[in-house]
Length: 355
Ligand SMILES: [Zn+2]
Ligand SMILES: [Zn+2]
Picture 1 (spheres, rainbow, N blue to C red):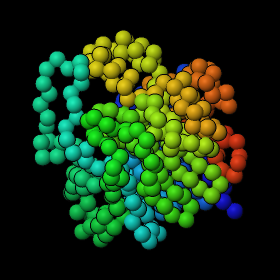
Picture 2 (tube, protein in one colour):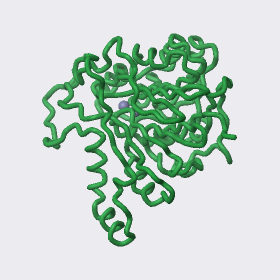
Picture 3 (spheres, protein in one colour):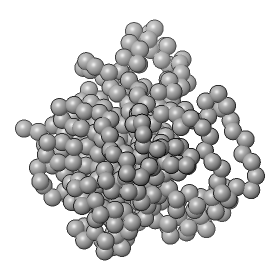
Picture 4 (cartoon, helix red, strand yellow):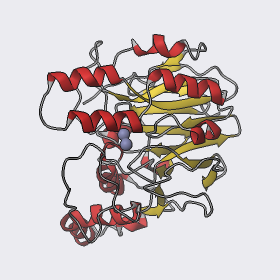
């Protein structure tokens, strides 16, 4: 008898930063989520520490059926190489390659920020916006000394015998354009992956200028979970999440970010950063409104920015979603199947925060 379907939060912080501790002393790892169904797991995103969090969670590489990347910002991909190279060593029973589904090359440079005061000179002119297939190849190539050594010394098979990258193909006719229409109105969710346990559908969400950016929904025989990816409030996501048992939505505390920038002047441009946060992310209140409109049964906020965010953000959000708003820590389970009321429970042997 399998444990009922659940999400296992491997990492719950967003943003390309090394965050400090929350008010209760928790240090969140970068965003990474496992969906566990009938003893098999499906991983979404590989943020900071994802490979270590995966190992600590008790999941096994041989039981991972597929992996998914919502978009190619580094806070979602930085530990993919750790997962790939160590996973290559840790597998001993795999009989088929493990797919990595992620965005393709956007195909053109992004538009310059409206607050830019001068030109930006692109680098990597041959491949300035690599998609998933190219990224996997480049990551493995950057470790060619190690890969070649393991193949000659340990007689390891090619890492491509384990990892099978795919650029997610956007259906024709949506009107998608990476600079002018990143999240086309009225778009139908489309199937990315399907096996005996899950059907994974995707939609294009609103995370400009980065594109394509996807939200994913996992439907099982006994319930569903929808993972927003990084997005501003987005109609396509409302549609994807319609009637879902659990919506895991990103959340940003804009006041908290303003405070942080004030205390750390210099570095990034404050104007450009706040402009990005407003156009590409969602506040807890807006995430709650999205969940209510989608008819989600439960809402959990993750990809928390700043990563030091405390539970105080739930009060404002719950006004718009009275069923309750969960703020999971890393290493927690949220059940969504069998009609169970989703709840946050520490994973066995205990919830962990490791970094
Ligand atoms: Zn992110
Ligand atoms: Zn992002």
